[in-house]
Image (cartoon, rainbow, N blue to C red):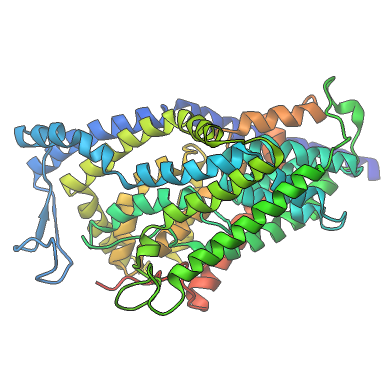
Length: 532
């Protein structure tokens, strides 16, 4: 009888595995059918030009919901489509092409922040800090520290994927645990917790720079600051670290079972791991000391009464010179400790080494700059034609008609972002496409852009783990095959799926509790609701 039950269970498991693998193959096939994100933006720009001409011919319009006398409101109270498929439209495209690109906020802010991060990364500071956190943890806390360090590594995007994920697999192997469990835990933190961090990173000014023009379709003076989601993303670090630890130890590791070295490929990495050297420890100590001094100096410019970077009228942080220039302080807080560390360990000796580190990072940004060029045109065209505003007004009216104006709308919004992320893995590309529609739409039913952006960041993160379209997915698979030579895409995604599901449920629950139950802002000075 037991044999028959085992056979039936085995057959059911095989059927489920087959269905799951076919689903993954379908996702991969559909994702591969999509053009490159840059090509996608170029096609969208052409589509907007053509559609604006058609919509103008049909007289598509919407009633302006803003109060009479509001900035940017048409005197007649009607918003009409402006055609770019005309002589005037062509003139505007030609004359605005360059300024659309150069004035696109995420371009400058991300590049400036990255200059500072590049010094800390190329000096070895970030790598040493991550290794020290993980390798210095006790055996009981090693899983938590792997996930926690992986989340923090998002400050420098490649660091977690290139350094921490292989290192986590090696650490688990050295402890007699399954190396793929370590790989999965680190992958979950780096990719599934992509938006969460204790520090502001390059993703913060990038998203804020896209959200601001989207919000200005409704309120021309609205500004979304770089630190708009800081509070929520800090508390999210603890949530993802705890959930990642529980999923690893209660679901993934038991499912993987005891590791069999015979499953490894011929180039199995050594489990003999070298700890931090005395020089590296000294470098971390002095880098930490320099970071403390910088923190005290920055506090002096904003905290005391009459501080030079506080708001000149209110004396507070919101809309102060400090908050407006926070990207500069991201640059400083990474660059100076990075150089101090480099001087101590010998990786940086003078200004030439700093310049070389910055140059290497800038040389790797070619693809991003090209993407920004086309994304900037897309955002500008959407604004010029009024298509985004009209879609937002009509969409908001539909939501109100369906009585979908409560907090539950964010569950659907986050789910939609998570599903789109399966095929369009670039965070900036996806937000540049969706923000001009959904930010004004949700503003019109009463929610602030900062709250909407925080919700997007959840959806953009949780499915990174299970999409083959994620740019580092191939690298993770290559590391995994060293420990399990027959590891395939389906097996890797099946391993990561529990993280994705638990992260989605837990993060959405935290969002609802934090924002709508406790009424806590998602960042400094960030309102929950939008009031015209």
